[in-house]
Image: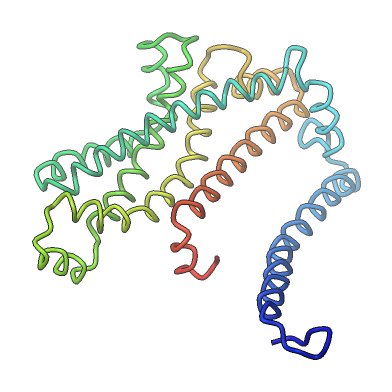
Amino acid sequence: MSAGLMGRPTANGPAIVRLARAGRRSIGEYVPALVVLVGGFLLLEYGLAAVHIESFLLPRPTAVAAAIADNWSTGRFALVPSALATLEEAVIGLVVGTIAGVTVAFASARWGTARGFLLPIAIGANAIPIIAFAPLFNNWFGLLNPLAKALMAAVLVFFPVVANVTRGLVQVEPGALELMRSYAASEWTILRKVRIPNALPYFFTAMKIATTLSLIGAIVGEYFGGSSSVLGRIIVQSASALKFDVTWAAILFGAAIGIVFYAIVALAERLVIPWAAVLRGDG
């Protein structure tokens, strides 16, 4: 309780204090990351010159920033249009891989026969080196077809979604199942009331992994040919031309897209299942 203007306690005092503390805590969580970012920038900017590392090996941050400004939206290495094209491929791959993964996970959780048949296929697909799929997809769908790169992303997305969602659907508290069955609940009701809520945290964990993997799959697929207006081709072509400042600029664009992807999923998780953050102790 806090004192009012006339010395009376006010009911909203503790709430204000808690809000202020939460605000300070949330700001404080970003301080170490900002310190590391600024420190790393200064170290690269002045440390590279001090040890005489050539720019073609590792360009300075200011040179990379200049390359971003020079190639923002026009020119041979236009970064923004290329990043949007790569993002489109990654999103398509994320959607396809997620839908396929969730479908297989539900089938595996519901029927033991399906689990014994589908999970080995998922594990086998995950064990194949991703670069082995690139020439196959390019041959099947066409070198310039974005779907060939999107399916590379879908392959990487598929297994984490299958593994996590299956675990969330299967590993339910036995007491919860016994309680539902004591009320003569149908399997559909148990799925809707128990299994799916239990699987949601696992699903969002899979999505946090899948967002970055979808971007990696799309960029790796672009290494093997296709449109020149994508991040993967910019990385290959600029490195071949010894324009490593442009190469690092494209890499930073890819990293930024991955961070935004992850942040969107994390925000969606807090909105859809806020209770999960409370259980983890971070919300």
